[in-house]
Image 1 (tube, rainbow, N blue to C red):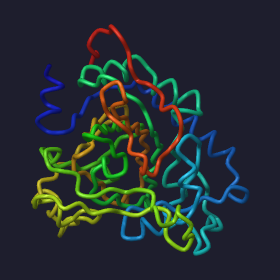
Image 2: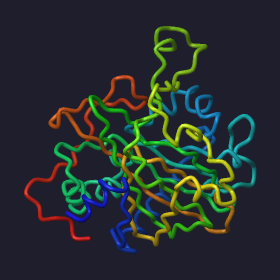
Image 3: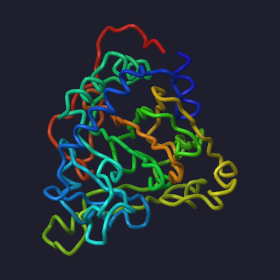
Image 4: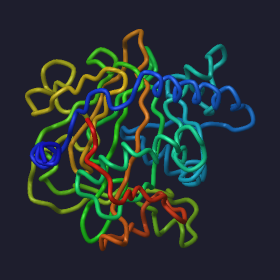
Length: 318
């Protein structure tokens, strides 16, 4: 079980050539068509952020909350006017931060990949008993304006009980390098507890519409390295601070897959290069058959998460 052992040790895997160039191009082409059909004048896209304005941006609109099983569009902050509209002269395909969070539910091309034998076989090989797929998203990491993604754990946003079971499948559709914003992960950090939870604010949903829809709850946990940079970037991250904090860059060729444990501390720098870094990401959790419950206060709520169970299959061919 080398994959499973490596995953248990480091909390992430880099699997090369998981998808063919043709599969990557098919997904890129499909997203290009979806964006072509999107009219930003009719369907205004909010910006997506992971910095100290995250609650303000994601927690003030039904558009984010309602995106779980739909295809919704989210702008890069640098491509949006102050009123949230698309800046004049900016091509919409070059203005988006991401599209989410129900591509795996609604779109046939992305659904076919999510439900493919190789995805299900990999999930099975890594020990999942009743995997279900709540979320997917297409990230553009636009050339020149693709924003940084601050340090975080995916289980903060996809929380399960009585144990954390989130796992991300991060597929590079284009080459991902240190120059254009590859993912950086901190090996072994999946052994640290979840530091906070992003959830639906009971005050808002009890009737106080002035309160934000979504908020963070900080957990009281034993001290660990990630405490100092949760939701931020480590000190001197733009120099050698990431390496000093224990992060490693995971540079990928198009078609490579990065498997990310829900408690692994990971981030990506802003893309200041001239090349975009498209990725398609799936986030799965264990379902009721494994004795696991999706938290009822999670931001993402819809009925019937698709199953990723595949019975009686050979080990994934990597």
